[in-house]
Image (cartoon, rainbow, N blue to C red; front, side, top):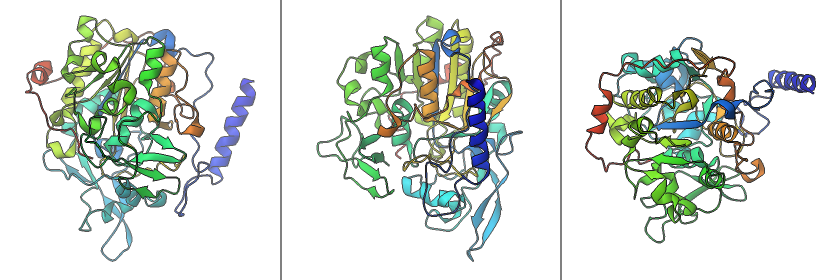
Length: 453
């Protein structure tokens, strides 16, 4: 049986090599880019070793913006664009800092324009003025924590959002693996009134995209969804504890997906599992309060969002990783750091097109665990459903739903291949943090939304 599986994988690789990759045409196909498959596992070892999964969600970064030039990663120091005469040219990436970088538009329409049917050369055409401001990378001295995590653990250079577009749908798909609201219709961009969820004003409408990639603005349902399952239902049914850490309990906006899920907003999870403030993740591990599954969102100033003009995001993530690493939970935990969308910033890697939603433009991903491969750059094709699939493996959970209904955890390749469960758990080495937990614990509460797209 294993031999047949290996032969099948070899045939798949040959077919891809012979031309089943997305090109510069005007249409997409699920055949265009089938996922790179991990080697078949003998049994499933994840649940034996991993009892806690923590998903840290930061904001609006492309892979190239944070990891351009990283050794062994697909991250060149230049990209394709157009000059004023309409000629396609190579554009060198320039260095920026958190304090002076641009904050470009990153709606569905911008993503499609920048993607340009897989040519990844439309980034110079976004905005009122033709420019190369998005062809940038952040000064590496400001990214030392992230590069340190990559060097000690796993940097995944093939993590793609479920869908083109901004934070609203990204946060939903990070907990549901889908945002399908009907037959080949999915949520897109965000609703027409804040806070974009069950507490929005009456008459609020969501937007949706159809299978022909036509966007219907403000024509979808009220944003209190019961159209699809989320991990909340699955985890509750299996009695697996979970928490979603966030800055505000009510009216949390587009980065609080469970406020837009009817099952959570009007059920016991709303008061039991939505944790405010988000800084409790810094104390919960040391107090024996780490849940089986946790999602952690930041404040605006700690989010990495270009509009925040703040360098504190890497230190915020460092504080979380250190809090878990120095707790009794370290030996049984996997931490995934992921960015919710690309933020309109340049990336060179054409996202595989698996359905009409995407995949979206590539984002960074760090995988941290005592069992994570050390200094490893994973080139396996991941999507947000890959994280959910790993959670399902860890807790022996069923899939959220079939791919035919829009769910992505069934089709996705688990992040399992970034781990080596044959090695003993590595001792945690604290990541240097010049600001420490106290900085974040003393931060005044923020009512400012992390993102408005």
